[in-house]
Image (cartoon, rainbow, N blue to C red; front, side, top):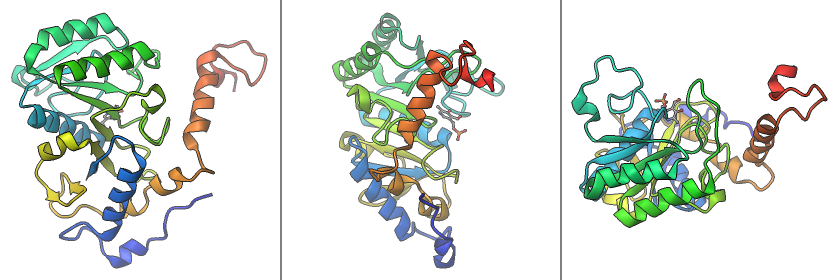
Length: 274
Ligand SMILES: Cc1ncc(COP(=O)(O)O)c(C=O)c1O
């Protein structure tokens, strides 16, 4: 089994003025591995990644409205936090809501945004707190792509939770639906604090300010960002043909969705029979 790299990077340096070689190597690997990715931006947490996606989409389209599913969690910034304390109406002024997996409600929200539609932001599947989880229907995933294409807006996939857990190339890869921008975090660096935004060429120029390289940009850091999390990224072993963590995840998820198959308890949720 793959083990994180020994702390060699610590000896070479961390939090330096610019990103270390391991960040550039990881950027190249990410761009090679993820089909929609022409460039990558690294950050430290999911909120920064989703916020950067929205900012980049607005910069790239020169529009303001962003469609977000009701109940979806995209982070703790004023534009998206579920807690309204300290949030002003202006922070949310251009966020419009739709129901996840409901194509008609998505179309209504897109109509409301009209020519000001910058992006549709969706999680890889519906994983709202205290609600049943729901995979996207193919019709829904395709409708998101169709609406973004028709409006020349960005499809942003929030893969912060699911990325690298369902598919190495992005969670909607099995649906044949590719995002223009994608936010990654939880599973990309073996638990170390690393997030990423990947994007298509069209949005290259809309990237936020930071340390800008050919493929790579570092966000939210007063320096080149910590080099330790990238040196521990699981991107490299995840590309190995022998190690497919998302396949095991899919199998466990299917068992839980379709009921306990581990014994004959007849319970709908496998976790309860343990
Ligand atoms: C789908 C999704 N997007 C964004 C975030 C925000 O990530 P962070 O807490 O690292 O800022 C989370 C966190 O749980 C998440 O699940």
